[in-house]
Image (cartoon, rainbow, N blue to C red; front, side, top):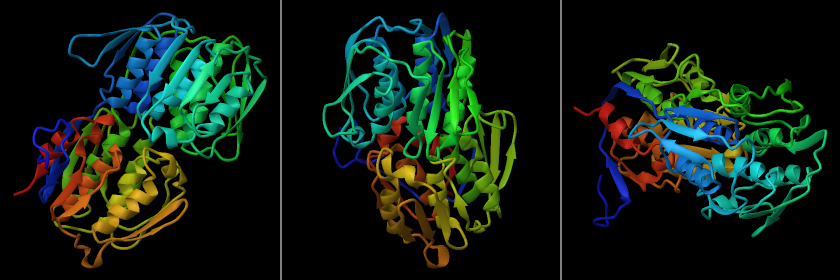
Length: 447
């Protein structure tokens, strides 16, 4: 890794040499989505929860810091990724706090909902990009329950101030699901604090449904069974209360798996990821269906997945697709880079949620793919990618990452196109996978 600023704690760029082949295996870090949901549910539960294999990243650090500030006892077991969380039985001890949550949507949105129903005074803020990510639909739903939430900047966006309020729990609460599934997740996780039966009704289509599935699965493990009527309404039962399951293990991160599985498909393989497989509760495990449709060889076990290229080691092109990726929005970014290695134009549809992520991912992806020689058409909710003529990527492209971990990890795959590539601000991967480039390099074969 080289930097233009000597001694900088965060290197300005990383130069990746051309990679001939990828092979080997990796044990995945824990899932961000599961880690932060588990921490919050454990903090709200009755009893002590042993959380094993927690992801260590910027996003989980924000949640851990917030829970400590709110008076929740969290102990780490030595140098392991195991934690003991002593639940607060639905009531945080600290009733006044100022929480900085970086750009962690999996911390900001659920904490907003839980704290709005916690009879305290709280201020929630983050990095500038977090203050550009909408939260109005969640705030409107919480206000309908009597929550007192103020916008401290632009209407509909963080930072927020939460004040004590007299709650008026409703039998039904409506919320829009077309911007972010995290709003629905946040509301569902918070509603058991009211101890009253509540029906959550969706307004419009719910996007990223597999992430809500994760939420429902984990709530059930903590003793709250939410009834579901399709994807139109969810019922939180009367008298619901979180109870520790005792011990819970965090799965490997299926979104992070996508980069290595894609590398196996492009670079011959075999590449095996361990910690996630057919038993996963994560929707992004369905990324393997896309790889199979593109012609890669995929094998799956209970907690592992292995990929090989369509013509392992002989440079075969993947098949271009026209595919709806609403159900796997994070792993869908990997598909956009895979399109560089396809035999025609690949169209990614129903990805409007990219616009309100860590950056505007549709715009960012279009700009950076063009640097590698691709022709790209960008729409409100789609991306159409045609690889460069002859399949030869532009050498020496300097990829900007927009302080977005997934941009950095996705574009590392460009080195498998036989060209050097520069990744600017590579350590933005610390948000979810601090050791990503070390692990990626370990599987790379260059000679």
